[in-house]
Image 1 (cartoon, rainbow, N blue to C red):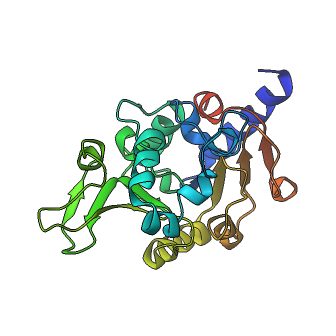
Image 2 (image 1 turned 120 degrees about the horizontal axis):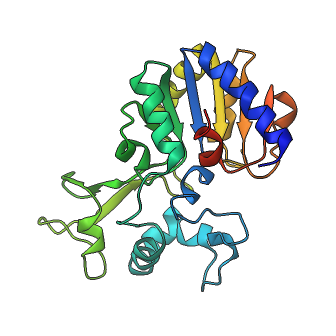
Length: 243
């Protein structure tokens, strides 16, 4: 890491040491260091060649009209059974155990924050670890029921088992939004990491932050860099591991 980034990390450490009401807001970049591809980077899903664009294949309409193809893509690209939490996930879980971090608000659906030990995780876009039958409502924990199904996963009652993830064209869960707004608006420090802040309405939640300790950690510039007290352009796991 170059000298400038190391100086920024030292400044960040001072802020986090002084804070006991941190909220973390994260996106796909938090999980890329675990080996999960994001959407918009060079190696991301949006740059891979499919019969349809990924945002089409992950839409509510496509789920309804091309259900078998949806599950083929979902199993192939969104389920990663062997992926483990990285240094970023583990540092955030540690901070929560120490009483410094009050909530993780995430756009990710991979469950890695919980796997690392975080308890108060607000999943804006749902989770691949939860599924439910659209007909009878029966819940299915874990992704084995989807992973092991031949084609479209079916419940004992005959209904389709749908992953509890927010697809394009679907609305976010109101309760999760309200809790996220509560924690962000009450935080004394907001750390945003691994997100380009391009996905709305999720990215708009950071407008509820009222403090003066806004930190942005992302490999690329974001539209909110000018508002932040510290902007670090580096992999988030490497940054948090030094705190």
